[in-house]
Length: 263
Image (cartoon, rainbow, N blue to C red; front, top):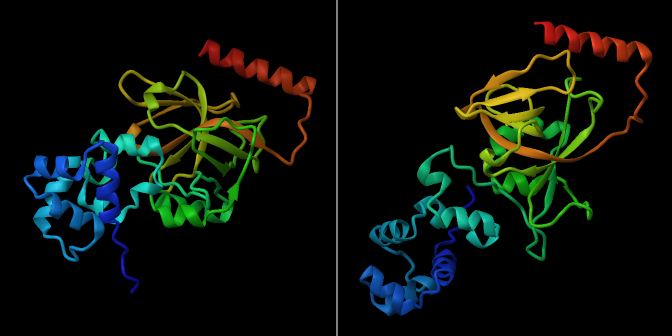
C-alpha cells in the first residue's frame, strides 16, 4: 500500500506566514519555544506528539486531516480564506463547500472537463484532488480569470434549445445565496440522480427552485442537502447547428404557456 504523504511541516509554515507571525510570536501564543516551532517546520522533529497536532489544529481552526493530508499550498486563495475562517470540510461537515482543484506546472488552476464516461464516478471523486487531477484539462482564454471552471456533458431535452449532448462550462458557485433568480446552473446531486442543468432560484427557506427552459417540464423544489456542487453557466459547446423554430413549434410553445397560466 502506498504511504500517505504528510504535509504538516509545509502547512505549519504556510499558516504561520499567512498570519504574519514570526516563529517566536507563534511559539509565545502556543506556550512553545521558538526552537520547537523551527524544528516542527523543518521536519527535524520526525514524530511530533499528538498534543502538538491537536494544539495547532485548534489554534488555526483547521482539522488535523487538512493539516496533515492536504497540501494547502495547492489550494486557491479563496479556499485558503475559507479554511482560515473556520470553514474546514473535515471539521464542520459536508455542508461546507471546499472545492478540490488541480494546478498546472506554473501553479495556475486548471479547468477540467468531465467526459461522459467519468460522470458516474464524479459524485464519489469530486472532493478528491487526485481524481480531479486525472480529468482532462481545457483552456478557454475568453473566460474571466480568478474563477474555477469545469465543463460537464448534459443529457435530456429539458433545456432546449440547448441540445442533449452539448457541453456546458460552469463557474463554481461557493455561496449559493449569491445566485440571482433563474440563474442557469449545472447541479451535481447526491444519490443516483444525474447532473441536471436548470434555472436555479434560491428560496427564502434555503430550498432550490429548479425550472427548465423547455416549458413542457414542470418546475420542482429540491432541498439544499441534496446538492453537492453548483456551477453557474458560463458558456456551452455544441455540435448541433441551431435551427429556427417552425411555425408549428411556436404555436405549440404558445399553447403550453397559455395552459400553464390557466392552471
